[in-house]
Length: 362
Image (cartoon, rainbow, N blue to C red; front, side, top):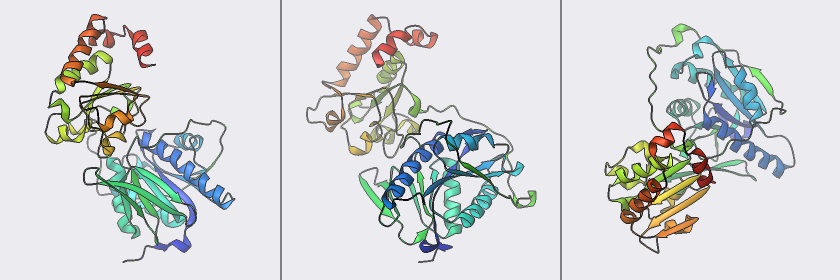
């Protein structure tokens, strides 16, 4: 196996987080990684009875100095700030060149990135250049304290298998993590840290791509919805009824993998290890068996309500309220009762009935 550009015995006790930003706003997954990274670093310092480990952020962009203080307040000890006009828009040539420079200069033990389109692009390019491994699309991270080894949880075979992966010799230990897996820390305005300016060696001749036009889709973000109405194989493709219920509740519809594979609903609405990890106030699970790779997608929900005709369904073990019955009878009855009480999609859109909904969510 090819050796990495720096071995484990030359690493520094740094956990580096790529702070992805878009239009001057930090991506949520970057704040989530700072929160998880803070916990891992504190764990290592507690085990070693020292303050040798620290968490650093790598911030690239143009006129993004203000994001450094936000990152420090959310967990970082120090920020490596690369501010340059050629970093205004993400291009893999410019960003990978600067990130590669910072990693070689700092020699972190661990390097974490969000599993976003740009994060995945950057992580793959850097792993090759650094001659190290990359644990992609992780759903869990832990540190083996005695050896300082990162343990990454990765699912496979449609979520049916969980693999725990370690990188014994190669550095940095790189991993991309799905958005929504971890929770961001509450910002502490009194926290202090160090901002280190990076000398950026970039010229226009080095960057062969440029942004011609920017178009942002209006896809639903299930990570931020207050009410999630999720359907499984037991819905037999009837997601129109679930959409009606979701509109009444002011929520969105999600699904397990089988309905997505069968074409009943868009893949962006898939929930679980191979989809989105959500944290709604209410998760209403309809006709879902409750396989582990789905349940991890709703385990952060405040309240889980499950409807299933099988009394032995695994989903009931994860639910706060269990309804034993046929979803094709229960859901229409629930819709009728909500409409009878005056709940409607139009009243939600117009802002009426909010107090009733907040009381129900609570």
